[in-house]
Image (cartoon, rainbow, N blue to C red; front, side):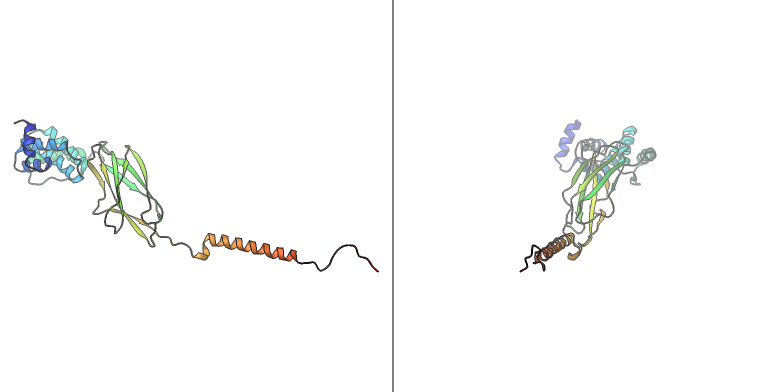
Length: 264
């Protein structure tokens, strides 16, 4: 049976290629597992956990069928996606040996990192400027950042904002006010998913379950007698009243009349 016909036959059983590949690997059907996992590479896009799992399973199956270079390459990608990853201790030493060798090589390079920052003193009624900086991208995989945000306590996140990442350097995005009518301090929650060119999630800054937070301060408006427009109106009225008084004073008949006088 060819690889294509095997994939077609297995597709009729339901489930994704990744799920079926994991099942086949757990049953030690290595060639079948490899065919399914290679097919899974062309599927997706994957969430971070599934993308990590795909490369973990590829590395394991390559190790079992004695393809150490391919196993090392899969494990290297795995450790790029998840530098702290560990394999189950029940696996064969032929797998764990290759994995640990890949880990030693991985430890020599910086882990992927995206820094998210914002200025202090943000207020609830104002826009929120966010800076995204690519600090480290050893395999040049970071293509887009997808930013999710919501007001703390909201049932769901707002529609995400996608930002193109152009390698090293930073990108800026300004979020519209999320609590323009608030009457107290609020907290903005957010998390960021970083995608590769195929849309797979390769890196995360926080997540929906444990988002990062930005404090937005509420600054109450000044009392009515301290607002600028009150003083402007007061000054205008005062100026008008002064002019009227001056006019009335000048408009009053004089006590003495000037001009020629005739005596009889």
